[in-house]
Amino acid sequence: MWRRGTVWSRGRVLAALAVLTALLLLFHRAVPNSVGRLGSLLESFLPWLGLVVVVLLVLALLRRSATAAVALVLPVVAWLVHFGELLRPGPESEPPGLLVVQHNASDENTDPVGTARALTDAAPDLIALEELVAPGLGAYEKTLAPEFPYHAVRGTVGIWSKYPLSGTPHVDIRPEGITGPWSRGLRTVVHSPHGELAVYVAHLPSVRVGATGLASARRDESARLLGAAVAADEQKTVLLLGDLNGTVDDRGLDPLTSRLDAPGSGFAFSFPAALPVARIDQIMAGSATVGPIRTLPATGSDHLPVAARVSPV
Image (cartoon, rainbow, N blue to C red; front, side):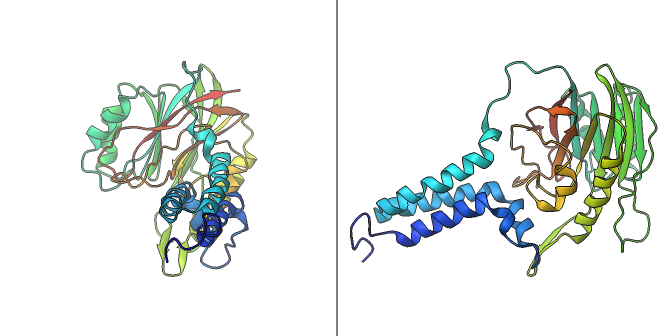
């Protein structure tokens, strides 16, 4: 029964699934967000549709279905169109620019000193940290001070720099309904050898996946507030570092991804650290090129640090 029919008549269901996978990859924006934010949920794990292709290929071989095998060309091409650029190797020599590190250090991190030292091993020019709380904050300040004499902290987010900073206000990205102390955004100007740039450090609200879908309303509202601040910035070069609790494909981050460019290559899945399935820690820039992004070794956080070189244009 499993192999009844010819190689062309067998596997029509597998072929249909292959076509559906290709359509989801190419037209994921057509999946509505009105019910359970299903569109954003799909986009959060969009690269993993490649595994569906692998499963379908195995089934097509077992079924000995030429129809399914040919149909699988469609999702393969669709995946490469969407993600192929991220697979390309970086340049043999890095262009001039700032090496930046982004890390949600975790408010439950029991080894802030070790975390700080691990981040400095990458020899960055800037380090952005989120979930800074006492007493860990003091450990970061003391450990990073020798190599990063300039730093600023607003609420639970902070930046450490080898170059002078100026004008570091709190950026209000608090969504409605959140009460009590809540400060997760800052903006500063970094005076680097490559020119001045406005740097934002942000930690958007968490999202949750449940029976009703993806709960991301607060994250999306916070992204809109941050996007408005970036849009109004008068500085030519803008850099955003932060735990945005969303991937660059997630339409909930459109207020940011429509204005800022993400890294041109590298997946750098950063969360959860034990088994990373998505990159929700982002490095994005306007009027600058973000080089290949990579993860750094694990720290005491549930996130992996990410690093990239940013070159103003």
